[in-house]
Image 1 (cartoon, protein in one colour):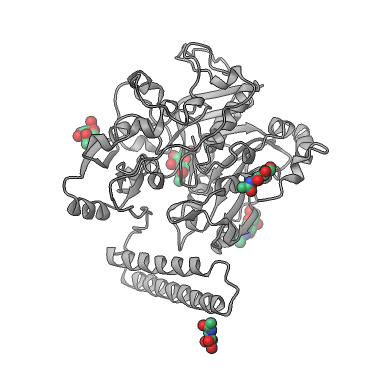
Image 2 (tube, helix red, strand yellow):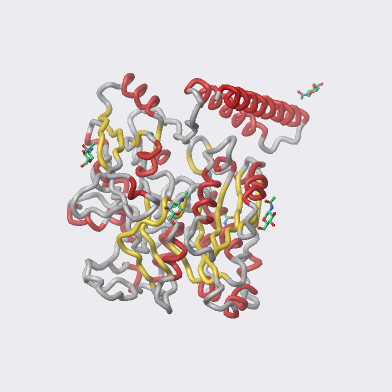
Length: 503
Ligand SMILES: *[C@@H]1O[C@H](CO)[C@@H](O)[C@H](O)[C@H]1NC(C)=O
Ligand SMILES: *[C@@H]1O[C@H](CO)[C@@H](O)[C@H](O)[C@H]1NC(C)=O
Ligand SMILES: *[C@@H]1O[C@H](CO)[C@@H](O)[C@H](O)[C@H]1NC(C)=O
Ligand SMILES: *[C@@H]1O[C@H](CO)[C@@H](O)[C@H](O)[C@H]1NC(C)=O
Ligand SMILES: *[C@@H]1O[C@H](CO)[C@@H](O)[C@H](O)[C@H]1NC(C)=O
């Protein structure tokens, strides 16, 4: 579904006019035909930014690249694109250290205009700008790319992902894989929506439709994407939550693209996910999953949760439950179960699960529980029209059972429904928790980590203030910023040295 570097549906200027004109098929499209199926590759377009780095971020870029390098089939390339208002100076070091010819930087766009967030919410147009850059990057995939997957730098892939994509039957245009996501069963009860149980899916099912798919979990056949000049950036004009992936899915299904659904396996982790949160020892905050700033929930430090529960003792419930997971992927077979601590609002009238997500987001297993009288929702136009028609574009597989099938409503209609922004509900006055980043490196004391956090926040604030400033004052701040970074790095090095000596 929707993703975002963070938000709903993963999801983020460029002069696309260069491609829009369609004067002559793009070069890569022509060359793609030449590449034989056997040396062809999956082209990963990875959208990343400073917060995926080592020093200021969560090290997730190394994780995703590691997950690609660990593929059982090495036929892939990764093209990195950056679009942000803050530079990502570590990017070059990470790429150089990996010393892997398959990994390269395609674009690094830094400008105050690419500020992803304004006071906690997505900047208007940010997702579409990022999608426009994604469209350009897709067109920069090597000629031998048969498949393309656009993803985010904090996601990760099971080692069988590339192999699975190439194992799809011939003639298929899209391979859709299930994925770990904070939008797992969003209309089910908060927290309990992640719980293991009879008949519930291991993770979110990729149904290739609005609110039920993920850019990162769908491999598109590049040749067809280019031949039909499909552009993610044009699908959701004015949209700010980046539902472009779901709209793309419904658009191409309507156009007759053939989809291969990989069922019962979870081969993609879209961060943040409750499963990853459980493994990292965080607490899943589901009390914010209906708010624009916390859409889908977040993984937070236990400390912040305890503090909030202390201040508002009656506002919350803390649950502990075993989360669903696919034991055949990500090496999870080593865990008999995954226990997650999960926070939700005690007042059920504040859950807003149907009001926020509507019918369209209900997981297959939850559709029977949707009350008839839920209020109209802006996404209702995307609800499939029928439950008993054959799933569009599905490529029948041997042994596949006749499941409940959904057909997009748009199928009967040439025009896609017009996108309208979702309704979000304001929470009671709650503090937005700091996003948990797995910084608890071995050997680092809590105190040190806190000090590091403070330092980073201070540095971040400085950078933000500096944005766009070419004035004398701006330059002074930039100098100050450099000093701040240097002193931080020096302290880090000193700390590391102490640790080495003492161990
Ligand atoms: C990088 O990889 C190439 C090819 O595998 C190898 O020849 C070279 O020594 C490596 N360089 C470094 C710095 O590891
Ligand atoms: C994205 O590109 C399209 C052209 O393909 C353009 O119309 C649109 O304004 C661009 N969006 C943003 C946010 O720059
Ligand atoms: C998780 O499952 C294990 C094994 O069935 C069980 O012992 C444990 O109590 C469960 N944890 C929770 C929180 O339900
Ligand atoms: C690498 O792949 C193997 C299986 O091919 C898996 O067991 C292991 O967990 C993977 N390691 C990482 C770091 O992804
Ligand atoms: C910038 O720094 C210089 C030297 O430290 C100082 O003389 C000048 O007044 C500062 N300018 C501003 C606008 O703060």
